[in-house]
Length: 429
Image 1 (cartoon, rainbow, N blue to C red):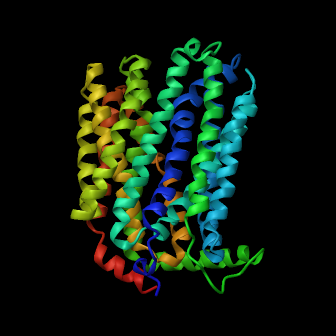
Image 2 (cartoon, rainbow, N blue to C red):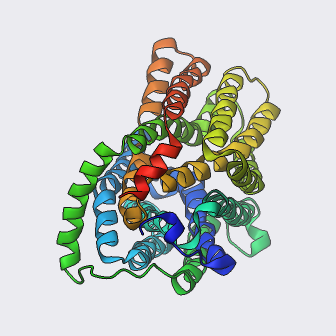
């Protein structure tokens, strides 16, 4: 019986072990990706390089790493499902990410090429491991707990990433207090701390979470061939699963707008004249507010359904965009950071749990490969839309309003997702 109900939940111990991986790898997303790497790359590793040129290098690294993940995500998921080896694949990509992050500590000033390689490998390990982490949710949570467990993972991610980032920020602001020679040493040490954090808190999942036993699957190199054959079958199934296809289109639209806000908030704040120190504080606020808010959204999803919670989050984000286009004071940016923190984890966690309901359990890694592939495509249309509007109008405030188009499109498509029919179709596969 290939349904979520057929999976035996692994109890609270399994849920905690699974969710701690979000606590583990969120340190990379917060301290490295969102926090220190972009600034350190430009000011330290690219010292002596023209500013526009270093920006180009950084953009190319991000694009190349994302493109690799986009191309291999569905194939990796298919291979993992064919051989029932989600945990080994997660461990493999996680180790790549941990090693690359630790490697940043040893990259010297002016060595932007080495920094770019380590960063690209870090993104590859981070993104690749998430495919299999997401897929394992069906092994630790029964159908009735998908919303709560998904939200719990995101909540621990916000808390864990925020705690380590707060320590790392304190180290850079007051290096002498930590026995460090300066901010540069503090940042480099932060990369080592992220690697150690990621490694240690990934261990509970690897040792405690049980991967569902699969029989009759190929082993060794035969897994690869079987994985490609399964991938072809999945493309055919996605065409048949209209509900899954519609949801993925909706997800692509609204998560594109969400990711655009995440990636461009600091740049937007600087563009309208806010000090960078205030923007870093706002980022910390979002992390810590996101912890309890993600848990709350999980409860709302259980009570009212994940679609309703996602609609609420889209509505709040739409109001945030309208407000951001008009704000004039720094305190407004802080307040918006609180509001975004209230819904950011919610829209991510409920999207994951809703999708988990719509897909066949025995192919969860493969289908989550498609899901994460769209996630990597996200923030493509949004930044382009914002850039075109800003260039055309010469007004960054007006450009933010253009994101309303993506939120409206996402909400409309989501309204056409028949959850009951989608769950029934997934159970019949």
